[in-house]
Each structure stands twice: as C-alpha cells, then as structure tokens.
Length: 301
Image (cartoon, rainbow, N blue to C red; front, top):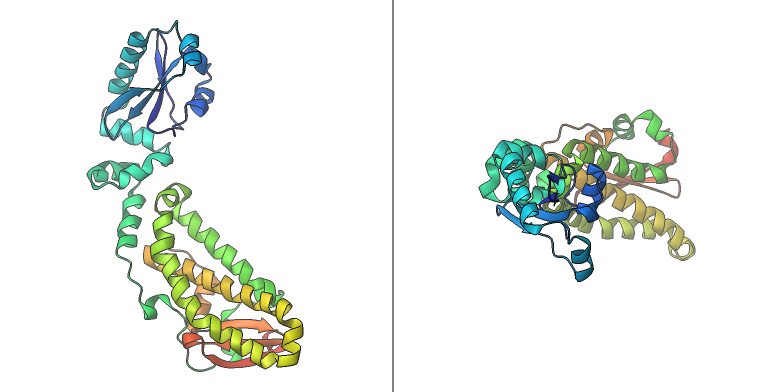
C-alpha cells in the first residue's frame, strides 16, 4: 500500500510526485520511466525516508542506479522541499489520501494549514449526541391541513409522479451535503459522520416509523387485496419511507455540521410529518410513526 511522499531518484537527480502517493501514478505525473529510478517513500509523520523493497528482477534492472547516490539525492530533496510545515501543507493539499494522519492531535497546526474544515467537522462529529427532539423531525401529533402541506411542497414537485419524489429528494439533499463538505474532507470524516450522526438518525427515526407505516398501509388496503398487491405496494411504500429516512439523516448531518444548504425538504420537515403515497391516498404519519390521517392524492394537485 502506497503512503507518504513518492520519491524517485537516479544517479543525477531526485523527483517527487505532488498529486499522488502512488509511484505508478507519480511516474505518469512526472512523465518519467520509473524503471530508471529507485523509489523511496518519505513518511512525513515519522520523518522517515525509506527505499521501496525490490525483488531480484527489479534489482537487476536498477543495478546501474547507485543506491547511495539515490538515497543522498532523495534526502536532500526532502530537506529542500518537505522540511517546513508550510512546505508539507502545500504538498498535502494535493494528496487528500494522506489527510487521515492529520487527525492526530499533534498535527493540529499542520491540519489547519491544509484544511480548517477537517478539524472543524471532526470536533462537531465528536460532540454529536442523539436528541429525539433535535434530530427526529417527526413530532406532529395532529394532521396538518392539506393546504399547509401543499404550501410546503413546490408546485413543480407536486406535479411529478409521487412514487419518485422521495427518491429524488434523497439524491438531491445528499448531493448538496457532499458538495459543501467537499470530497477531500468527506474522504476522511465521512465514516465518522455515517456512524455517529447519519447512522443514529436513520436507526432512531426508521425504527419508530417503519412498523407503524407498514401496519397502517397494509391494514387499510385490506386483507384479500393486500395479499395480491403486497409485493408491488410494499416496494413502493418501503422505497418512500426509506428515501425519507435517508434524507432525514442527511438533514441531521447538515444540522450537526452547520452546513448552509437549502432545500424545500428541510422546510417541509418543519411540519413534523412523513407522507406515503399509495393507492391514490396520501397517508400522513407523525410522532413515533403515529398515523394522523390521509388525503386523496387529487387534493395535492
């Protein structure tokens, strides 16, 4: 596994990759024949310069490259280009795959130079504690008027096929969260976000609403009919419920990380309800998955 700064050296010069830790990709970046250079790794967090291990075939190919000269040139390169914190920060900005090491408290100053967001989000993730009132928006105990619900959903959305709306919402909200956090930062803190924020929100919210929604929809469709349409309707219901639950987990991430993103779904959540569209009806659920009532789907046009 490649790590650290990828360095190449022969008898005359030493070079290093600035956009990757891979020697193969680094050779392409530098436009050199890697078989004509000895390879080194500079483990910046340990301040160690190591030569890459070679098998007998590779040793024969590199026989003309003096190991002592190559090592000396590589060491001089490190001292010249990667010694100061400012130099390291400049290089690290181009190789986010190395950022996980910046989460070590001893590299806090360096991490701030590379990406302040990295530490800011890490602190917010660590401070996360699930609160039902803060991270579970489904708190309604009464059925909101249909006009109030319609007002919270844009007309262009209401004119779409309802079974597809929540899937689109899930995708759109995730796209905005990803865009604002940034792929480089997300690659390091994403796992923590999912396990400590998104995962808990999905688990808590999903457990509360799922059994209630499933039971209510199944009961109202009717025993005999339910047996016939369970597969089709069940898939539609499940897709709508979990798309909303996942979208809520993204909203939870937005809330905890303090992201300044906007989407109509976030305003809709203020109603404290989940809507499932099935068999021409808009079934509305609230606190702890309680069924609050329903409207004819035509009322939403």
